[in-house]
Length: 125
Ligand SMILES: [Zn+2]
Ligand SMILES: [Zn+2]
Image (cartoon, rainbow, N blue to C red; front, side, top):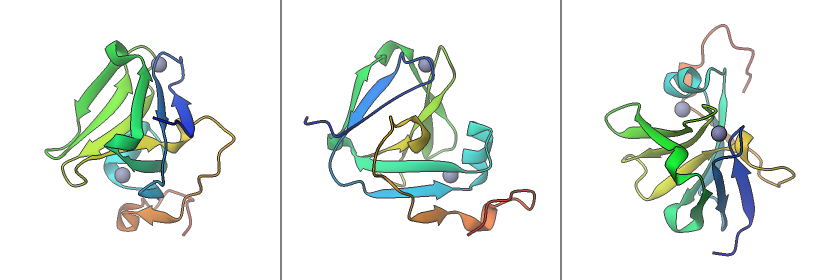
């Protein structure tokens, strides 16, 4: 795979790369993302699995089933949540944009699950 972008968790144990045209680059304000990441909003970049590669840390990667359809991948050592996979979007890996090494040219174009934005958030769309 010719890698175009790289990323990693906070401690660096987990490292990944991806290439090709992303399926989407979007922020999400759904309840599950917010609670899982402890954040008001989470930015994601999604690619087809063939364009994703885990470069290091397979033994540190833990998948938590966050719903019947979905699972979220995090680092066993530092707790950083990096990945999302769901049968709702089969064959795709979604990566937390905050974990992609900068500089890069990926920019969020949409906000998903706007109806779940909490009243306390200052996020505007
Ligand atoms: Zn880590
Ligand atoms: Zn979400």
